Length: 167
Image 1: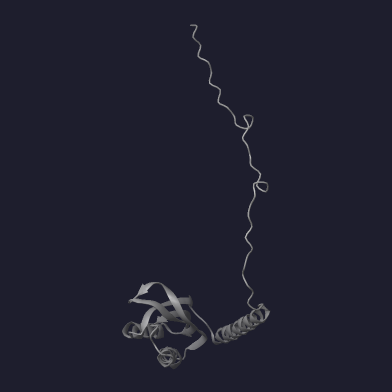
Image 2: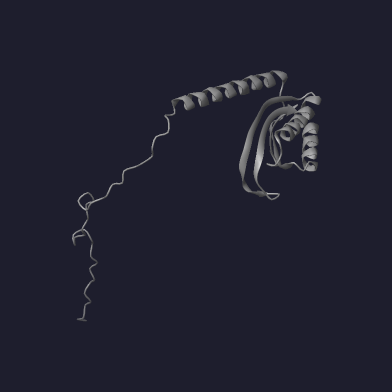
C-alpha cells in the first residue's frame, strides 16, 4: 500500500446529502480494497481562485489515505465521469506504508484535530465582545513633523575644472 493525499472540489449547488454521498462513495472505494482512511476533512464552501466550469465557489474535501495504486486510478476515473466533481488532485506521500504506520498516522491526525478544536474554543472564549472601532483622527501639525532644509554643506557641488587656455 501507498500513502496518498487527495483534495477534491465539488459543485456548490449540491445538497448536504449529495456531498455526503460523493464522500462516502470515495471512502467505500478505499475501504473495499483493504485500504485505510487516515484523515478526512470537509473544508466546506470556499471561493475558487478562478472560475471552473462556470462556478465561482466549490465545496472542498481533503482526504489522507493508504491504498493501492489501482484504487487511486478507480477513484480518479469516477471523478472524471461524475459531473459533481469540479477538480481533484491526488499526491503520493510515500511509496510504502505499514499497518503500524497507518495506525500511528491516524492517532496523530486525531490528536491534531483535537488540538485544533481546543485551540479554536480557547480563542473564541478569549475574544472580547464587539468593541467600537472608532479611531480618533489625529491632525499632524507642522511642529510635529520636522522639516529638513537642505544646506549647501550637505549637497556636494560638482566642481568643474577650469580649462587651461594657455598652451
